[in-house]
Length: 112
Length: 113
Image 1 (cartoon, helix red, strand yellow):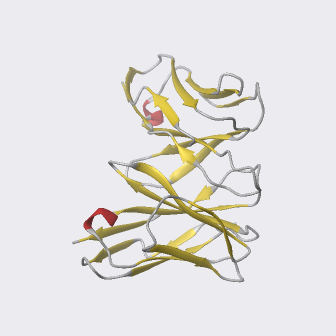
Image 2 (cartoon, helix red, strand yellow; image 1 turned 30 degrees about the horizontal axis):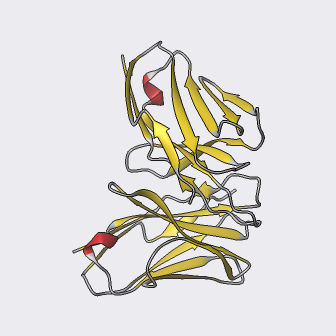
């Protein structure tokens, strides 16, 4: 059974640019969540999508957005990149409320 | 606002010793998770705890949940070097059917031979 797949694994972007990250969940999982991990702030929830609808949202500025497609694949977009956006971005998929979230390998974004 | 606190943040222990990591959270929740993260890697699910008094064990790790005290523990028995990693607890208190984890700051465990 394939796990959660995130692409790309590594990205280097310049301040002011925008970036799109992709996440393919485990087959059959309809919930996809995104997290940002930094040494200073730890793991922080960005947003969750379920059946193409944003179901929960964390405390991040509007530069961070996402979407989910009908096949449950999800993308997140960060516009007008700032140095502080450098982080490991993790995607997680879940089958339901009482099961664990399975995490992908992450996309390491470096903003220079 | 839900807050999750872990202690200790760093733990250096000898092989063969026992120790406990604590996870306190600030608001009512019926779902608590433990994850492991190796350096440069993603999060690996260890345990899902869904009810008061829940206890789960896998190898040298045992996790428990006390929802009344808002406390979970991860107990390590006879530690071995392979357990060296960072351990996170995470709590989900969404009232809807969603998934939104609030993570503790992590406990970096180093097991020395």
